[in-house]
Image 1: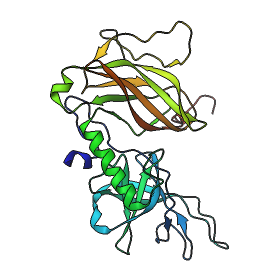
Image 2 (image 1 turned 60 degrees about the vertical axis):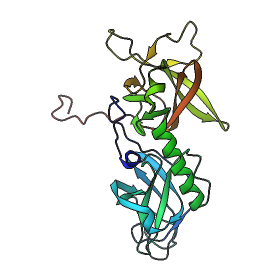
Image 3 (image 1 turned 90 degrees about the vertical axis):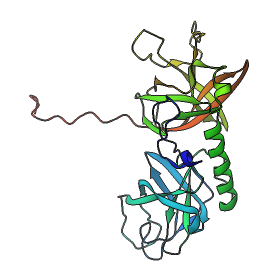
Image 4 (image 1 turned 180 degrees about the vertical axis):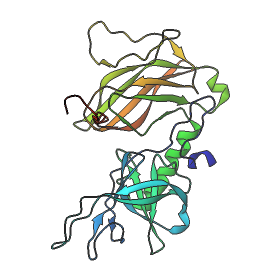
Length: 280
């Protein structure tokens, strides 16, 4: 369980990837001085490691561990007569005991309690804080025990990310294969829909294949297995920013199942500014 609290654990030979992700939850009102003008009350939300988290109530201070890293709170402008503030407020977010930061983090307050922030698209977010906390801890155990998909929680459109399957039980790992094709999905009308095939590089070919649109005529998933516990690079397509899901099919002793991880796709990086340009 100690690994669940690390922001970037190592899974065997898997490249170190973050164990944190995002939330849109049950509306915790925040009146702390860093989040709002005097007299204001805002729905608690924050950005952590590039991904949006939303408040789902409060937890006692003894459930909060040390700092996990910097984050930011959006401007709160719900008080009539106060000036509009466009800048986000930097804050230090904390770990929640027994919860992987990819699923949830905490923002302590002067009252001794802490706002519980859950990553978006997480099934634990629409629950009271106590039940949300139990749900997050259960998801953390499942993440560590596997099979589970480990991936970045946020990345820019068109960038390369690492994904890998975690299988903790060595006896199972020796008999398991993962497919070489992953999927990028987005929620449409309440259901996850597959948009792109994200292909792992084939052995000894070099380069990272471009994403392939689902339904492309003539496309066939390569019938090659990969060893669990190792991460593999895939390229994200140039899609609009928002919440997506990565999905990977896993074959365990002849039985197939899917493992998933939510990812926030950010806008592409802006082009570098032009200095000393001949056109001025």
